[in-house]
Image (cartoon, rainbow, N blue to C red; front, side, top):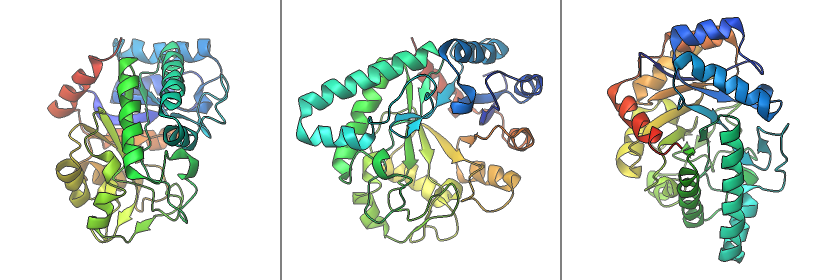
Length: 315
């Protein structure tokens, strides 16, 4: 991986600034993530992703996006997906399985085609959090269902068909965000349920998933680790590895989120010390990007091996 560092960075605008080019050459992030601010149209976005890959001389260099459908639509300047929520697909799955398969496969195929046309090869879905009454609306219709078995089955389908299309997936927010009563972008949620309950409910959809990547939750599960959010918890990450059984690349949720206390430097170091493989930083703030870059280690053999496995599905 040519001395790449174990972080994923956002960028500020629709093309790389000179500062960003120098930053990428110097710190060599493992990947880059795009948002609506980076996307005007297909031609411009392909030029942007091509300019990133040119730096690395790697046609398969990981470029991510958060294109769930519904209200999480980073391609809003290109397409509309207002009604194509995960809740819609979950309800369709329960009502008519054949119709679900037809519509959801079409959604995956068209999304994959569009992502590949702009040079994106990882989509940070499926969201496997449960929809829970009384919880924060940050999940809401982004969840397939309140039933863990339904969420798990649709998650498997999502991963399988994105992979068939040559696009990687990221299961999130492991080990589960559904019970959070506040939005972790702004506050630190605390879940008070015991592990035995969580194992059958919130943790269940994440088990036996063939995704190459997973994204952590910035949530405290106080019956398991009352001090640390999952992203910073050795105990919870050990549980993710051994009990949930996720053995591939573990990415933190965005380190610029307000749910994390402490400085960005401290939060970056804690992320790796707890056992995350990659740190994610999204907002494109250059000073913050430098802090994350400086405090992210060189990619290790595990990440190199798993990235090579991911590269094999890319067309």
